[in-house]
Length: 535
Image (cartoon, rainbow, N blue to C red; front, side):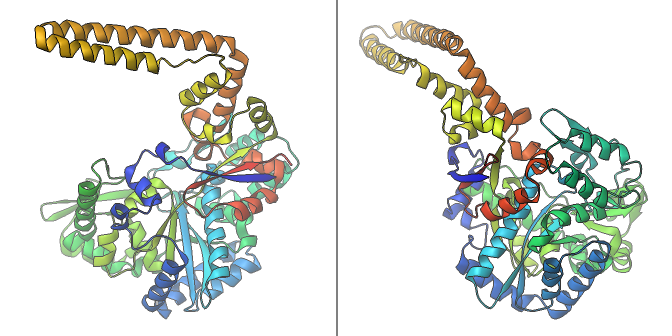
């Protein structure tokens, strides 16, 4: 394998807040504590160490040891779990939904990056120890988002009625057909048998999806000391009691995140909130699933059936905290109370809603972590690699839009200039001169001039399109080759990392692929990793 890091074209990033975050501009700095650096990590480490108490470390470590009693834990992971008892140990965290068979490639990249970051920090910063953590969103109830796995030609669907329950609690009954369909979709390379054995080990009939997810991800990353956490535990919820109650008593998350969002909007006019807060930002887990709580007058309504007074709801929270579940906006605070965390790695949409929460963290007296944009990557198999070589187009051009890529290729192939820009400019200048003359002579003539200008510009546009079409036909083979490459890297009009599962790539390279990504994934926000599987 070989790889290269290519500079990300920031003009392709559609969100202004994330663009400013990457560039570390002042307008983004207001909504983070500080940007990622050795110095900022060190400062956050000192502060978090003083905040995160010994009893919190004890609770965390004991629960992790219980969790891993069902898993073949590696020496590296066990060592990291036990080290969390020490005040000098801190975490770097990422999280994701419980997609079956790990879901899209970006999940692998996120986990690899937190490992890479901790390796980097442990080599640079003395007196602190950093542990990589993967937070599984076991309380999520959006089953449709996690129930499919995509390959280039096949889509595996788990057809199951989750009854809106937390996905981590779903039992893997009647899952054999899903496993078989996944295995049948894997290309028969050298390591297919190995991947199938990992699937059989992790996805056991009768286990919960949370357990299966932990076992599967652990089997890929345990040698790197990754610690996976399922936070849907009563003891963790007890540590969050005051925050649940504050949300009921004074709508803290709702008020603070709305205030923060308004400030972002005033600074960045194009900003659209990734998540809009509810008046109550946590759910109740009922016999009918994970249900939203609504405040109507002085009553709190759950699932349009059960209703509680303020005192009754507070009493339920205190007596049965395990029945309550933070939503996407409360989860970051919940995470940072449970973990001695200093850095969170997330995708663009995740970072957007984290940046809506800085004030909420401040008013909750919890340190806001350093945010880090997750790495992006593309994997090239031998077939695509050869096509790119023949196409004679730099890899960076495949990261943008297909139309722009094709125009670039046609321009390079064409023996004459295909752009009519100079003609348009000449035409526009001529009509500008005519307008000046008409104003001095007869202003009513201006309307006719404008109509004629529009007609002639349209005529040029049509001619240019016809010329491009003719030129495309002259280079049909080369253009189809470019389209095939682009579609391989952007299947279903999505970036490869957001759509394809890792299975076929693992089948070809095995554990070497995982270790290679950990080693090569970039810490820099402005780079894209390209991995070529061809030796």
